[in-house]
Image (tube, rainbow, N blue to C red; front, side, top):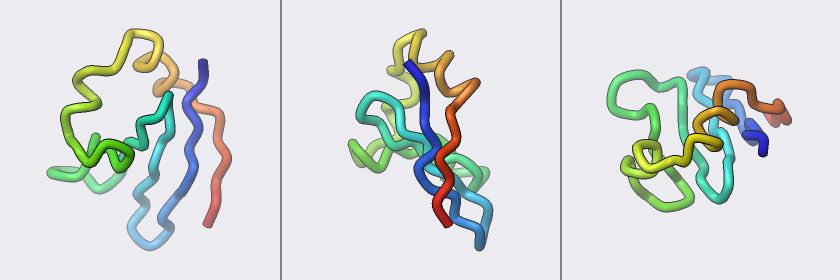
Amino acid sequence: MRAVVKFVYEVDGAEVIHVNGHELQFGYGTGGDGYCYGHQSFDCIDNLTDEEKEALKAPDYEVTP
């Protein structure tokens, strides 16, 4: 399983990484990192499986401006 960076917001450097139905935001820093757009929650990142956590460490990048 691999995580895929779906979007990179070039204005402020944030990116959304998709892994198994989760769309996790990274790059905003305090208060924004780890927000799951797919589930409208900050809880998803704490409940990822070990495989999903590993996938986030080495994503396949598909970057869209």
